[in-house]
Length: 200
Length: 222
Image (cartoon, rainbow over all chains, first blue to last red; front, top):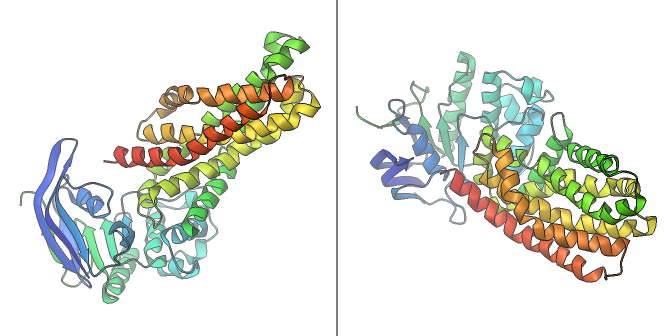
């Protein structure tokens, strides 16, 4: 499985964010997208997630599921947590599991993996920013999708949670998945590729 | 199919939880219709004559009430992004949201209609026909409103724009809804023709609404 971006360009509001961008990523590999604020890190992730249209260039995935689009094989963890405050922690997770197409809907195990097992019945409105982040991470564990698109995944996470995230990401890579992460700091991955956007 | 049902279940659950708008529509409907006899006086003949129009206007405004929140909350918390990345087409996800909206705001309107119709001096034997027109017509209101809700999703105060966009499009529904209701209550015009046109409007909007709404959402996120 290989995700390839060929001569990608993206413009937003008439302003060119980036252009002539090339990258290629195989399974078990991670790509760190770095660059200054406004360099287009988030735009690139949204472009891969199918939430933005490329102004130019082509994005392709080889050896994936031919029936599904790239977006349907990708998890997108953006700045927003996609949680409903009125639903409980487990209900939020179960909904996304069911919607995104998990085979079995079991909230216990993913919540355990992000350290929220004790809070399953608490309304999500009472969670702290870091706990909300962990809950959206649980979605990535609950539904298996080969491409993870992570936008600043460590924001609001404390040190133990960042370690947990790092081990989740390593587990995902070992099982053949790929990760594209926009970040300002190290994520605790072994030898990730780096894609630097904007002027150096 | 699983994902489709999951969206309906989630939106219905959200509507009946704290801060949801499930009963607001029905309560608003109630208050609008209750105010009318006070405004025009206790003339029973007049009330019976304009009763169907009042009920339909009330239902129209009540179903608009919760519509502007239909996509904005999902847009604000990022859920809309994920809904676009699901295994079902966005059109279906949008249709599921509309169905949940109708079940939590349209259906209660239909159910409280007999109570309100009594206040407007509608005869008991016409009650079934009246409820039937609202049951057939309110889905059209929801699915036409869906397009407006999708168009105004990214705007801060989209509620008013939504009303301006949607209300003119609901005029055919209003005309045939009131015509069918009048036929059921006072006659002598037959009930069948306006009612079947009302059903046709609902079915057409059921198909076209989600397509247009999904296109609007995709365009809005660019």
